[in-house]
Image (cartoon, rainbow, N blue to C red):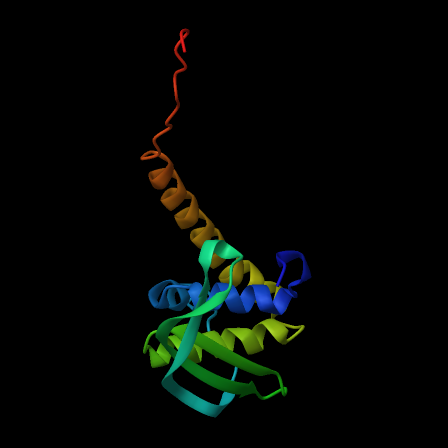
Length: 150
């Protein structure tokens, strides 16, 4: 899916899925109290098949399995939230589901984006830039000198 066709919810779910459990918990600390919610699907670990593509655009192949944990919650106002995270952290999946539901609530949406989604996204972007800079520092440019006489 092209990033220009992603919805806002797809973007914030991606940020929550890639977030560090401790970083998400710290961001949730900005809220004095979480809204009451009901757990519809308790956090449970499982496995998903991961696919890759040779060269990024070649034929798809099965790379292997990855452990994910999922959870679904519903706020008192009816907003449904889901959380899918890599690994086996039950609390991380539940927190991601609660944040997803809160982000859909018009009364909390702006605060959630300002205090949770935006800081997590900024941290992830900074980490990507640092990895890219580290990789770029090891880049070697090869070139061929052509001799004047054949």
